[in-house]
Image (cartoon, rainbow, N blue to C red; front, top):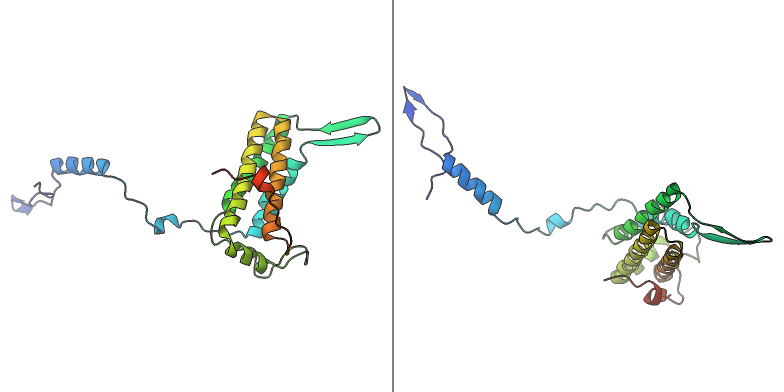
Length: 210
């Protein structure tokens, strides 16, 4: 068995300090490089710190880019015929690319646990149309799997739109807009609206990927 530290010896009346044997150093370095990395612990997986509320994510990260996506291609009927507005310049496509990334990553953020629905003082702006924050929180708590599926559907719609934007495919962008609309409506009908029929649009139009 190799000795990790050399023995102190006196030379000329002075004591030399403890030294690390060269062979031992090499052995330790090899062992450090070849030893398997420690398995992550449950504690190490809990580094996320949800700070923004669901309401804030929706208002700041979902609504603006979603509106930009839906407004990217507009066909208007005029006395002179149909007028189509579509992205043309590099800057316009780049702006849509940023919006698509925001949407898909918002879907990931919404899946994080322990994120509050809204601030304590927040109330519904449309009572009777939208539920109060505590009622929304209760629905999410009752069916967290459905909440994660809804958030994943938003993410997947964002991926479809990102692919369409990068391909500069207007038809695919319109199809992605339909999928985004289905994802939003399905989530709202399940968690935001008072009692009523639950939309099942995503089962046919926007089922999240596995």
